[in-house]
Image 1 (cartoon, helix red, strand yellow):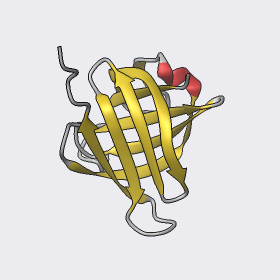
Image 2 (cartoon, helix red, strand yellow; image 1 turned 45 degrees about the vertical axis):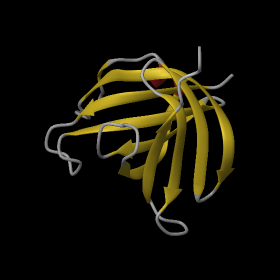
Image 3 (tube, one colour; image 1 turned 180 degrees about the vertical axis):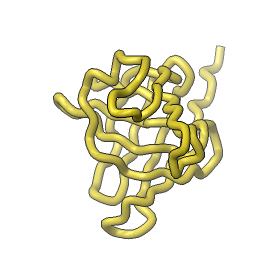
Image 4 (cartoon, helix red, strand yellow; image 1 turned 60 degrees about the vertical axis):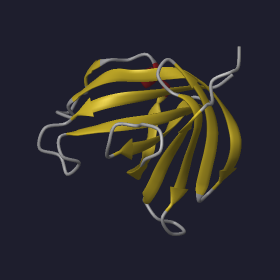
Length: 127
């Protein structure tokens, strides 16, 4: 089952305000990656930016990034299932330590690097 990770990325002086969250989905040996401009949470639409694929080592890494790219800290991790994937949208079911529910990403326009991230929390099971 594929894994995901969300890293809090502290990057002083960046265009993203110094802190953003890297949302990464394992796809083979690479991680499909988006930079979220706010901390993920239920019910909010969060601006996101599609980034180049990252190496799978970030699934387990915390610490400084070479080349003065700041420092990352693991905010959440877990497994996911793909519910839908097209070039303009991705919907996944997350089972993480913090987030359990449906995450949806959609491009603002076809071919855009600007996306929107939305998370819907799983309803608690009865009993």
